[in-house]
Length: 170
Image 1: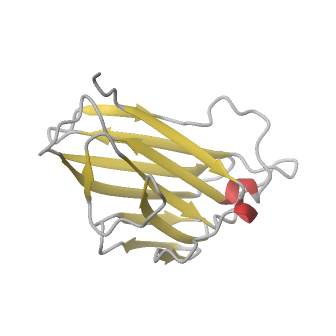
Image 2: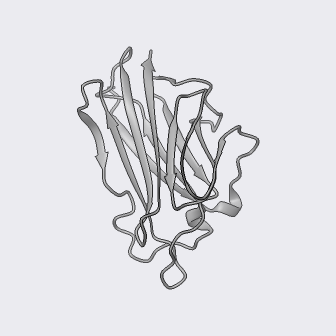
């Protein structure tokens, strides 16, 4: 049976999730850029505070490089997000995901994974977000792809943007 490219997004309750010893990189409140030297993931941030941004496989093991097998998945985890502009005590995060091939053609282009949520989230719930990419068709082994995940606040200009090139292996 052929694999079908898909994506998933998991919103996790911050108090139930921790870095569990994963070596992520810390991002502070301000403007700047950070890089994960193991995976090549680059994060720029503006307005948010976030404790860690890291890349994990399906078993939540931190990736040591940017090579991912076909028929697998990886997640970029944003942990400890703070400084949402609250409306009626609720945070209104947005999460955009893009995956492009080597020629820049979109394989995935989702403007906001939370577009149907009108009620918002408790700030603690919105403090941990995870964008997950499932590796399958139309992706091919031996090719390189670009992933871009943007976390944004629907009530302000705050955002976190992580990009990562990844190579699909057999």
